Length: 392
Image (cartoon, rainbow, N blue to C red; front, side, top):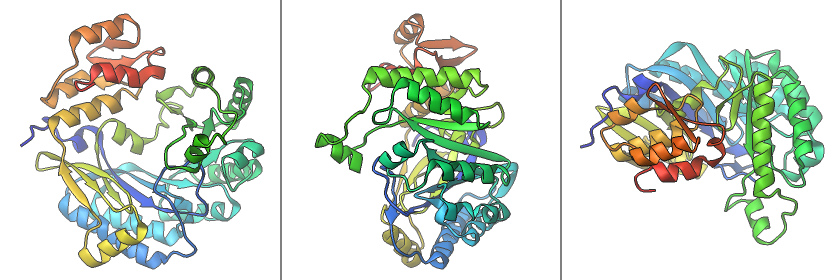
């Protein structure tokens, strides 16, 4: 039996609900998420299945305060507002919502989906995350996006008139993009007055259309590692100067506008995941558990309707893995890793000699019991983790 932290993770770092909506209008060539293109979706069946899964977890994990709900995908803005409202109602029946609970929905900025924004707000969504990805039409075409830059700007304007909190995503280190191109695009984005930006470097994953093109030599113009690193450093400088410091490797916000749901992940809180491909991590009776679900939407739906559970796996996470997960995730944050909490997992502690070397090289900073990445350390986080984790 594992020896857990003295305070359960949901009390230490929060408790959230992740809802995965797996359907998209088209599969983006860079996307390796669990998303599927289908002609029709029986939303009444999906509403019933999602409600049933939330109720099941509510019975199992009663007495908790729900800090956040996140509708991810896929494209959650293809959900009918009635479906969103049903899910939120089921969550509030299962758990007591925290005062000021954050309820986020990911949206694509096409006109048809933007018209649903008011319905989502009426359902209870109070934060919208819009997948803008670029403010350049040629780049959007290369990324396989279905919207134009003009549509994205219109969706942002509409969303900011409806929701108190709006975030949007951009992708950089794209094909044929120069450092000056990115400087101009990011400066333009900041000129829109965002409170939160998610800024991701394009990564080419196996199993994606881009991955296949790269293998066949049909993805020209990608920046080399040095240029991508320059783009990352430029991103930090521009955002910090604009009052949007990085609170996480790829996420920037004005103080008080950080994404609360993702903070639960990075602080290793507890969360329930419902929907195809959704993962969960939660503590129950002193044990940290991981859950998984089928990737295929039909398989998940059938499992819920016939077996009463969408889970395909439930496994205990031992203290060594808990400690490793906490170190990896917390170092992504500007607030860093609480070494006291790391020690409370009763598993292992970082090698002091290695720690002193990394601090001496100004890759890490240690103060007041917290271990943080420096500006020099952030771009090489993976290398730092290889040094700190016991299995390398």
